[in-house]
Each structure stands twice: as C-alpha cells, then as structure tokens.
Length: 226
Image (cartoon, rainbow, N blue to C red; front, side, top):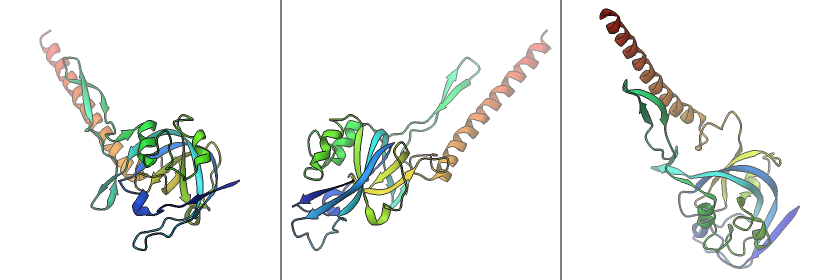
C-alpha cells in the first residue's frame, strides 16, 4: 500500500525540524510508503528533506522531550530521587524519580503539526490521513521515516516501538522495537538507564541497611534496661 502528496511549499529541515525533538513510544498499527512530489524550487542554502518515506502509524503510549548538552544527547531530565519517610525511626517507604519533560498526546500533536489546528500533521502533508489521526482518532499518530535509512527495518502490527523525532516534527531520527535490550529508558541507552536505576536502588538499600542497624541497636538498648 502506498500514498503520495503534491507539495508546493518549502520542504526543508530548517523549515520543519526546529526544537530538541521528542522520544515517543507506542504500539505500531501500520506502515506504508508515502511519496512527496515537490512542486516548487527549494532554497539552495537549506537541507531539503527526503521525498520517500515509510509512514509509520502508532497508537501513542507516552512521550518526553529529547535532552541535549553541547550537541550530545543525554538522558531526559528527571526530578531528584526522593526518599519518602514514614514512622519515627526515619524509615523510608520508597524512592521516587519522575520525568520533568513528559508530554501528553495533545501537547505532542500541537508541537509536530506546524500550527495545523485539529491535526497532528502539517497542512498539505497527508491530508487524507488526518481524519484517522489525533485528535480526530485519539492517540493515533503518523511519523515519517526516510525510506533509504529505514526500509530494512522489519516491524509488524502490534510491535511496541520507540521513535525519536528530528526536532519537533513528524520526521524520524531513529526507530527501534522495544525489547529487553533497549527498554531501559527513554534515551535508548540501556547502560545509562541501568546506571541510573542501580544508583537509586543502591541508595535505597543503604537506607534500609541503616534503618535495620538502628533497629538492632534500639533492641539491644531495650534488653539492657530489662
């Protein structure tokens, strides 16, 4: 199955791909080849976007803004891990850490639609698909992956996927199938994710160990007074 668009405007990375981008996770619904036929000359000084894509439709699960430092992507911003106290012995119930830049489906739709109201695609990109995408069909989004880079990827309906966008756009920087090797965190770097999780658990275990030691010392003191 394939589709196409005749596009008469500026179709460049500079025009559509500003911003830090997003990491979007969801369930793959379908994918097909979509071709853009450019009807106007493009600015010579800009980077013209590819014109053949794998159009990937997903059901949205969650998304977060990509995070960069000195041109290098780093894990998304998170709040400091917090130990929740309970009881007079300074016990800790759990450790919490939450994503700072998490966004919902409505926010994502506005960010990637280039001002096209009530749509999650820019105007004249693929207007026939708009009725089947958020907000008209709740939580459904279409992203475009360059055929030359992603046609070899083998995905099927029902796969859980993680998509990184090029800037705040529908254009795909990377797409991976979610499995045990890359599910660790939003950045797709399992080592960073494991390190982050391990540091939290290490701190939690240390707190629990200290609490246990305090309880034992109090029990010894109580025995001495009996």
